[in-house]
Image (cartoon, rainbow, N blue to C red; front, side, top):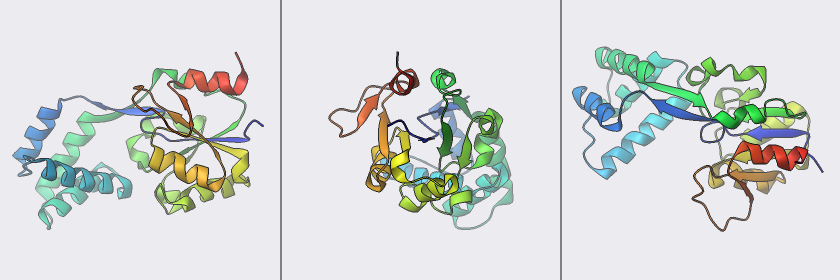
Length: 212
């Protein structure tokens, strides 16, 4: 049975972060603010802070403030302003080329992401998808309540929906546990032996749904 609704993850599935500067240049800028990322543990801790701030910020200014406040345990408006400006200028999201293959599929389509709207508003995805972030759902993946919020919005049962994502733990397992069909997109062809149908591009998804 074909789904009535396809829910897509965003980052890694439909879009990717495009960095205008190298990783080394990002680290050098962080260092100029007093954020020294020398060890693997320091880098991982900063990634967690960054990810948390991205999920809960409404704009670039707030993103910079939350990161600085978390790193230094106090406010520093000057550093926050510099960081906000740097990230806005150099961190961007772009769509994968094959996204055009699924834009006109004759199914209801949604995006369920933990990314805040300001990070991808320029992509104009609302023309083709109903978009759900933690702002709308009040929950982040892999919490099943985020998925249920989307299903309830469309007034559908789990078995009437399909989840397409690139993260097994955050996208596919919670969807499968609810009774949804789940498809893994493995763009880099790195994941093996998974209990999910796997595709390498959205062109393959179109063939699965519409035939050759």
